[in-house]
Length: 235
Ligand code: ADP
Ligand code: ADP
Image (cartoon, protein in one colour):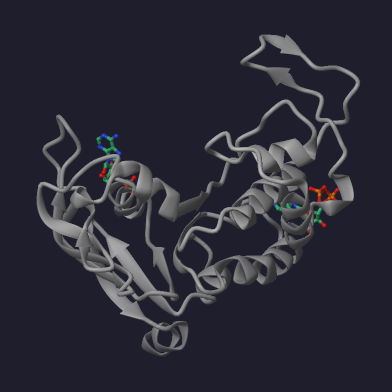
């Protein structure tokens, strides 16, 4: 397992003149966590989109364990990647069902759901039924108890625990949290990332410093790299 590699990747969005990534190279060694930080528009999300093959590069290539992504079947690639989004997907269903459905609509067995819920800190409300509008059925489910933003995030985290994919993408996983919630989450995220190859996108230094390596991005390229100690020393 060699991990993820971007080799001299150049990419412009369709109908855009601007290079979202230009001669971009990045290695995420297998089993390590790499953080991408930098201002809005730097190209962080674009890296993720190319990794998931929402787009292909105009030049250069993206490799997974030495294999060009373009020669991996899309379904296989999707099964290899888990993304923990900032904004969780919400189903109008009991919490344990919300966890079990996952992104691909597969129902997982309930023992596995319980373990994932416990690891995510969602086991205290697993039988709860959120009161919300179901866009699929086109009606309100009433008589439930609303879940807080933090609880929904725990559900999304449990879903990520349930998936056994070797690659993990954390997209601003702690962005709206106060520092106490962040501290709790960083412990859980470390458990989630254990043994996986992970890319962490974050604006927070206290979150980024948990990564094995931090890359600072600007204008579609990496302008600085190092461990958090190295970056602090350089100022
Ligand atoms: P970040 O995630 O670091 O905020 P992005 O990867 O979203 O940065 O953006 C990189 C560059 O690509 C920016 O110049 C942005 O305006 C541009 N961009 C992002 N998404 C699109 C899109 N769908 N169409 C055109 N340009 C885009
Ligand atoms: P309250 O702060 O009133 O307890 P929550 O239900 O959102 O409201 O918080 C419950 C727990 O969830 C908190 O103790 C904290 O550890 C965690 N938490 C709070 N906010 C967030 C958040 N934005 N994302 C994830 N977890 C959170």
